[in-house]
Length: 428
Image (tube, rainbow, N blue to C red):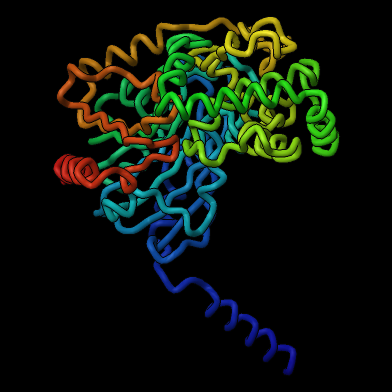
């Protein structure tokens, strides 16, 4: 009798421990075509429910025998009648697991939120990697399939959005499927036209003031002039971090110095933070690796982002380095064609296809609509921002002194109000 009573108590406790809200959404999600797994997740106060969803996708619908993969999607629910913020992540979407993750557009629009992990990244990679199926058109097809499926539940207005590569992803998605969403907000999204695009170096040479740019150059030269005393610290850091490279470590040091201006303007933008020539070797070293660490060039550091490097080499492009101002201080003779040497290695052979960027630029100039492009003035990626001056349907805003962290809510008040007014009009 005591045993039965204990079992009854355990059963009652387990029942009362279940969530008090309706499982209607869970049931609907599990019944959707292409959905192979749904897991309930914790969520904060902004949303009422949150789920991890796995969609089964073809690597290429036109070649079914190529196989399938499972794509990770995070859905945060407010109501069936609310608008939807559709995040086309360009990389892994692991951050979206957090119960408190809320995109700024979700707050602005009081919207549901759907975050899609990009194919070939993190948990959304096929078992057997065939790089030929990692294309912008096939990725856009993934987003189209997921949106088409979830529109059975959410039939309000949809806005696609993404940051950096994710921003370019949502622009490409609009190009391939122009009728899928009602609006697009792309943050700091580059449209590079070559693997080493060529616009970033002159852009960096004109950022801010001549005095600020001189501080950057002086720091680079100081780090190279002190190579004999700083390199041992640099080498020890690499050994302790257990990093390996496709190039000699002496050359890695050069590339960290070459990357410094890009990384500094991308994220920091305040030259008061640069140590002076009077500082110790340790201070110079610490600042260098804080801004431009060697792990960026390492095999280990590029492991999780290898799909991006393939995409950059194939369709998305990247940037180059200026070396002339450091002549006589570098170990390398030239930084030309560095990208494949450092990031791809000999196992990945790929040629750049420029037509994708050309098509996207033309689309944004002529056919894009209800689109907002947001950039930072100091962010080197802004060098590859598309020209949309002839398209009144596209709003392009560059935040003064802004970095890669520029967002709507950080814009000057007038620009912010214009963006919010436009979004409201498009999403009503």
